[in-house]
Picture 1 (cartoon, helix red, strand yellow):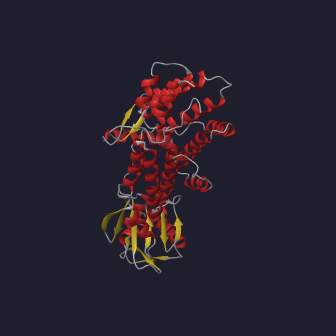
Picture 2: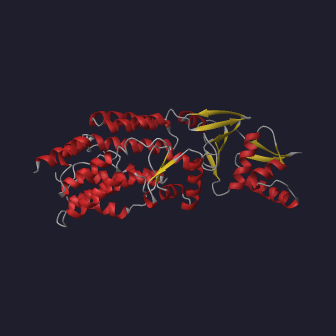
Picture 3: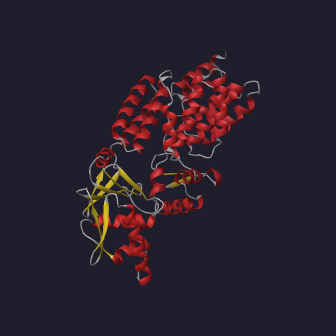
Length: 406
């Protein structure tokens, strides 16, 4: 075995990309190219890293299936780090199966976690949760066990379960300490800070205050009637009416929730629900129809009653009505929230994660850039968007086991 390749691989596994480059920077054989690519990725030079990994994959012959599969895994991880979520999942699955067949269980597990992390990024939380539920990470090295717990914490945060998220992050901190990789420790610390960052705004009788994730979890466990503008739903005592595909009904519900215990004039409801500046009889007729539909949707835990001026929300059992809103609200807030993770995103990846068209996302990015809230680098299909400043390292998932040999 080549001693320099072995030493470089060990340096990468320990989170020392500069140490790895000192040993293989001037070499162009396939193992050296692969290690150079991973080192450049850890340093944040993702475009250069991708080119090196592809050169390495071509340099490895067809007989070296395991090495080629490891290159595919590394390239997929670089795509994840650069938020290029459109990379071929089938290629990653094929590489994982090759690694499993040849007994490389560590890199196979690494590929599997990449796929789960992608599911989490594009909002397929239930699929990620099901995949993780069947995974036994007890036999994995500390670095991958840290990744496992970070994904568990990510799912819990998206489920608004602060307690399980804190426990998962505590385990991740222990495993990261055992791994002794500074970037991995930094990732855990960054995820932990999210729990101390405002997650939502609470609007009650015209007053507003910011809530942490723990506060949101406590609110959901209460007996209050909650108009949830974060998930476009109305909930009370565990019952949920989901309205993401009924924007008019949700706009009415939010207006009524913000005005509780008072009522909302009809002209205000028309403006909130339909954007009508001047109401005629057709608008008022449509309002009556939509209010009837909302009354039917909420009949399990609230009434929408007519008043002299307009309409009011009357909960059945809840003693208070509150509105839960995102910390920042404007038409571009969803795009800005994804970019706030500190990574660089492509517009196509943002569109995939938001379930929107790429052109819509591009318009939002242009608007945010004009306001100085985001910045871009690269040209054409290589353009990436981020919130300033550009992150110092790509992702702690760029910690693969040695690629070239066992």
